[in-house]
Length: 171
Image (cartoon, rainbow, N blue to C red; front, side):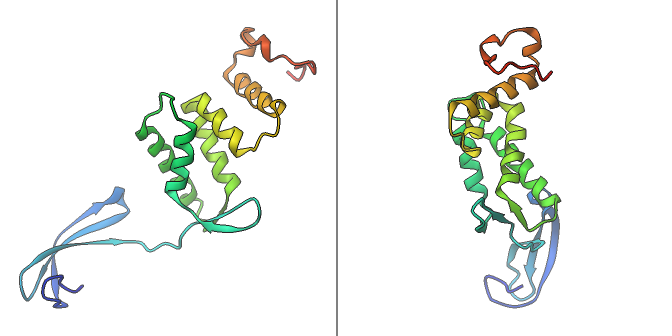
């Protein structure tokens, strides 16, 4: 590593610590020639994650893009910025743990919806309506029915307004 002051190639490591949640090592170095101290970071070089879109095209995974789509779904809801950041961290960790370098956008959407469902149900429905590209109110109502069914409210008789003409005899 070249010293940023005198460009000398020799330095010694003075201190090493884990950084960035254990994903990097921070090293304090001292130049052998001029004595200047500087910091370097060492991290595993990973192949970037690629997202395979519905139309078959691919693009690099962009965390800011995912954050923004979730923030929009959570607008004016009691969901903090740190909750959204944590949700994206969980999704990223899940994708990295899968050890695949290309992932379907559908998989990412499902991971987000699974976490949003328990974080905020209104944000979940907002995200699902865009993600699943609902074409009419019937599809929208089906998603709400499923959300309500999962929450167990139908059994308590609190959601009669969602009973459609087709009847819900499947249970």
